[in-house]
Amino acid sequence: MTTNSQSDAALALHRFGLGPLRGSIAAIADDPRGALLAELEQSGAGLVAAPNLPNSAAASRAFFEFRAKRLAQRKLAQRAKEAAAKAAPPGAAGNKAMTASAEAQTDEQDTMQDQGDRPANVGVQLVQNEAKVRIEAAVTAKIGFVERLVWFWSNHFCVSTDKSTSMSGAYEREAIRPHVLGRFTDMLIAVESHPAMLYYLDNAESIGPNSVAGINRNRGINENLAREILELHTLGVRTGYTQADVTRFANTLTGWTFIGTGIPEHGGEFVFFERFHEPGEQVVLGKRYPDSGFAQGRAVLADLARHPATARHIAEKFARHFVADVPPPELINRLRASFSDTDGDLKQLARTLILAEESWTPARTKLKRPCEWHIAALRLAGAHGRVASFMAGQTLLGEPLWRPPAPNGFSDYEAAWIDGLAERADIASNFAARVADRLDPKALVDEGLGPLASPQTREAVARAGSRAQALALLLMSPEFLRR
Image (tube, rainbow, N blue to C red; front, top):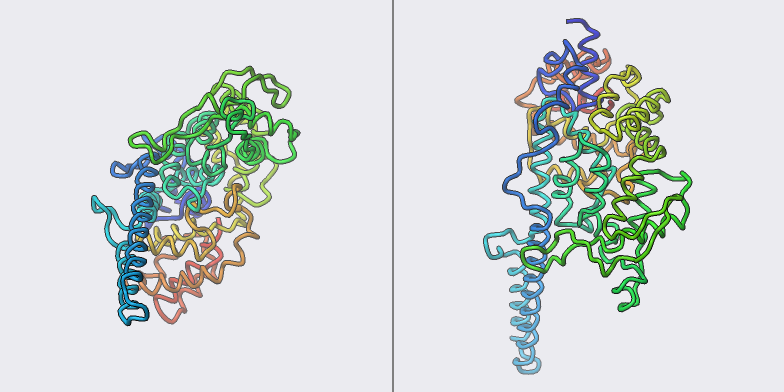
């Protein structure tokens, strides 16, 4: 086993995976590239076992029922408060006591369990249950390359729990994971027709002004989804489309919505409402699309997926995410050609990334995003942690799970994260204080970094005043922070 092979193995785990598990550098050192490619071929790659998690429609209905019941409880408490105030003699001392009792009843109702033993805040519990499955998949993955692909595409096609509280985790399982090694066209259509995306980008109530509903309600289209598909999801900015293209594309997507979440059984499911759909032919990017209802929007999406600008946009973003803020032009060209030549085959795109020599530049200039670094620390320490604590840590680090600041997702540029290293140091110190007593930080230098560890990092860990300090120094070393 050569030093170079060990270096490539460590590089593979940090750049393309989620950081080493103990023993994993040695386990893949004979063929690091082969180990990454083998993960793409595993049965069910990208999927997660979640038999007890509801789908997005069921989750949205549960959240609707929870909020409806909580609102009713609060109104009953308010009525009791008002009745108590009316019944008490003017200025009576019991007035305040009865008011306090009514307010306490409201607090108790807000924290009590709902029928069926559902936790009081169903929205929080839905997100945490989804997060637990996601974190477990990342912590236990042999390498984590496919999980990184899931994370990349989930961020590219992001939604936010700030708006789609009940659906964001299920959206990732339903629209991203099944297609992560499939074709871009299929993922694109799955994403843009998912209720979480339709709600997040305001298409759920987009109505063609000349449709039956538009005429009756005097309503019009919402262009948000169409604009973000063009600018963020497919072609990229400044690629030749016009405002007229945005408007016409938005017309093709009218009627793409979902059944109201208050409707039993089918609430929250995607539906195409013909009476919302703008009638007539639409011309998008110079191509004519006849009025074919739901199929009209699908046809535009299929053509956008195959557009040369989309291939370039995806290639640049893919290379930047994995390799460098300014990736080698040769790598971008390889990825662009792979995307175009294979009709958007995402498994082949991942294979091209791994087989390209430009992907293996020894200079590790790419700063890991907070979630990658956080998971890498758990993997190296053999820890799992509590979901709520992990999510709180991610919020402190500026990358709250499924809560991007805008539809363009979390940034992949170092400038967005470099100022947060002080917060990482705090988390590293607190984490190390909890787990270091059962670990040997000096041994973890080899397990976590191997030949990537500099003499300075080895010396700093060796001379630390305690195991906790040594582990924190390792987690905050430049080699562990970067890909």
